[in-house]
Picture 1 (cartoon, rainbow, N blue to C red):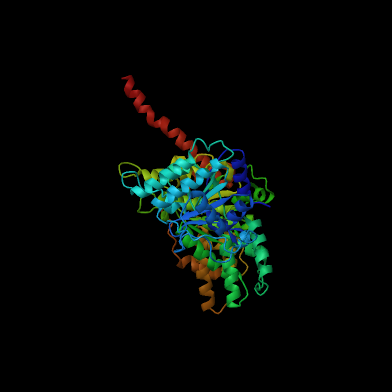
Picture 2 (tube, rainbow, N blue to C red):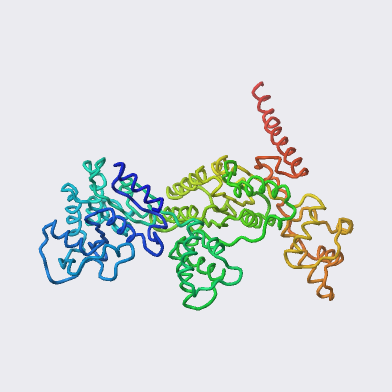
Length: 599
């Protein structure tokens, strides 16, 4: 069965929609089938389809061919003189890859005609070869590293002349009016990891086909096949092909093969740590610290004191993503509230419960010092997000990370990046596949364009527990999280502490966790295995919690919530009072102005 990307190419070529294709994305330099790289796989398909010449060109090797026999035909058709010296560009000298093995040449069927590597000499020959289609020959031309030949950076005034000449050749081929709409056109491929690396004019002139990293089913199939082909590779306890496939989200087949080979060479069972370590290395190298992935563990059952949000996330995100009915899944969810309320923790537990990838998006690492680098970094990151779907993309402190430049100091680069990011977030084709989850203490600092529906459909408040009962639950949850045994802690015990002058009202989850850990140290010093109410009372007297600005941050969060049903009763009442006060304030302020005008 042909891969989907090739079906798309073949259809466009056959129907004369396009003859020039930009193959871009992570899969541009990955295995296309089994252990066969994309380039030899393309060669095999094209040779099998009856193409007389399948030509490659890159700066390192010059002009090469899918088969040695094709070089001889190339020389004959172009009238090139025979020569005995030099093997530059003579085609493959090592055994042919599996995709081409059945087309192996006969002895003495290759040619020794030296071919130029210099593009100024090579490109006129390539142009002559493409013109052979007028004589009934089927010709394909592949540029495996198109970004090096036709780079995006530079303008006509500063780009060296040879580079401009190469680009004009490519544009002439792509825009050839005779080949457009013709069923005898040559087939031309530009392979590039990202379209941002390719000259914009060439990008616009080509039919773009994205080669994504393999999805879960592809990864599982590949891993299963490779493990069967490597029976000496053993899986550690708890590791299965399915978990291996889940852990390698966003990676290429070549990366998965690397993990398998390393386990075989080291003669050790393949475990999750080996996969995660290799994935961290690859993600750091590929995405330059912009994207970080981690295996989310636990579930929303681990979240305490936020039942109102857990219920919403289960019904609006988890259940639809698991069932596949994602039409109503929010494009994004903004978590607003004071520090320490568990926004990051909630995001991880949501990803774990939904069974999707958890991705940290580091916007600060996008910006680069070279023209075009920031845009390229962003495109690479967005490409990575698409390859990791379905996923939760988490942005911490989004008010600091996503801020549009303003005034004279704002550069067009920052505006371009912000606009591109907003467009990606609002792309409804990602609904239910990419859910943006962002945390902020200061939602009032966010750009209004970020807050509109279609980007953050749900703006919710993550607030301190609003009742003594919820705080008791939070105490127990924090003790369980840290492996600390609690004595029977009841509402009455907590009320007794508050009556004694130690109140936990307004405490966040982080504050309560700090108190629990302090109480545990007190219990240990006293030789107890369980924390008592007395230990907690001691900890509450000793620990000083900074509540400065907390009330104002709560009010700020309540002001942006766009669905009051997602608030506990006390906070909902506070939000409604706050809204009424803000509505009344303008009328009161405008009264003196009306009186003054009547004088």
